[in-house]
Length: 414
Image (cartoon, rainbow, N blue to C red; front, side):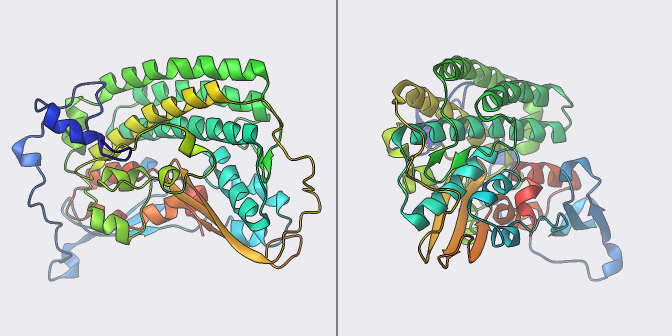
């Protein structure tokens, strides 16, 4: 089996269905939920507009997580039209980046996907390093991988918790997820001085080194994570309410996902084996053994399971990185960050962020700040196919489908 081959390929070895703790995304779906021959409802409306009920879901609605809203046209409970509306944060991130130094933009990246600030740091640092031809010390590369995979783990756990919360299971699953997230944020705070807005990475390395005591705490924390994932999966994966609400709902066909530029767990849940950690091998990911879980149906349930399985793969990477991390510096002492002026040119740096491809495009004219600064955020791109996934479903399904996209409005706003 190849590295990126679907975990759900094991279905042939387990015809009775997926058991808790297994790597198989295929469960025994009732005949009414099987997806063969399923066709997306046509975008047809009743003859008279007066027959439709138009509803604005959000921003007050708890499923919209902030300033995002959806203009929904309903025929009874069935969705006929859905238009996502966003852009009210006025963060102005890209224009700010063109008016200040390269170094000054690093803390602003924390505030894009504020659940994943360390991943944001890495993507921006990678773009600047490509622009300037800057090398990174080996110990810093290991620290970047460790922090990125801890970030991926806590993001996916929180995403699943929010999804189940929106399904109506108030409290328990989300609190289980946040319990583990808080332990990981304790590590971030001890290393970087902040729990969420970490401002830790620098082009050319990392701001400060991790102490031996911190690494020991990280190893102990990682050693406990598989037990949490097992507990989380037993609690949720075979729950009959979750299966009934999520299987066959919000299907994203692989052709549409590719054409729309969807990336991350959403794309892989539709069966497309694309992970930038494998494709680009940025940093030192090519040194680690891990697999890329794939779904078969592209529905809400597969998106839930892909994230759960990716948490297991993150633990594998963390165990290897924490075992192999070498001694040495975390920054090149010859690098001058304060008067940083890369040669004229352009560069695009991208990573496999927890939500998908996060990229920074920079153009330098030789000055102290970028001539052009643009961000390719996964939340914005992944949200564009929300209507396609919701057509023909009920209002209650719309809440689950939007939750399965896993967005943060900080990187959706333009």
